[in-house]
Length: 279
Image (cartoon, rainbow, N blue to C red):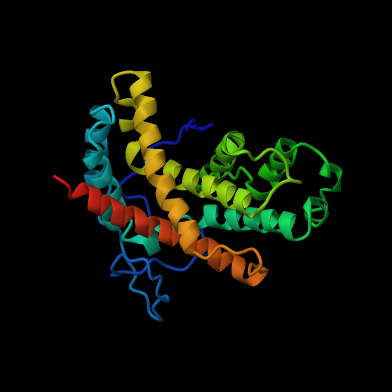
């Protein structure tokens, strides 16, 4: 992954969810799981512990210093990051508010390209001028529409993740809107979610460590392994969510996206614990 921006690392005192977001509060305690229970009627408000990123940063730095050979430290870093730094999958998902919000708009458009056809999907966005244009031109226009550059870190993460997904889509045979099918949409949406989670993780615990490997080739290896770790969890989360375009409606779209993020973080935590416990 090569993000178009370089994000500063997170301060240990930085709120898990910015106070300017109109979003439900974080709730604690909650055992990390994949069942996605309902939000408690009276959530317990949580004040983040100082230095909550220290442990996963240490593990991630140890992994980076090994030039990617110490996968156990990577697994431990991810597990500690989700379960301890972020307080579990639900809170981790809530923290991705901007990415989820933009992802819902993106998935709504992509699902309409299948249900209604690309031309009608573009008309609904008043983008008739893009009908028949290359997919890169269409997605370039959607970048400013769905992922405006608001100047905040969270805005930049969502925007950069979409740009990275566009750069990678040809590797998966996604070349034009007219031939998009359900599998293409699942793949592209998974690319986007993977990038948002990876960029967020690096901003939180890996900004300095990602530069530690002994040479550029090893740095690429370190980042590729991280991406593969995240990508596997996201792909499974999308599959487990019952992704079915025949059932997607405007009133269920948000729930689907939220579920994918929470499941992805839950799987990252579970896989990280399992691999991190290996001798």
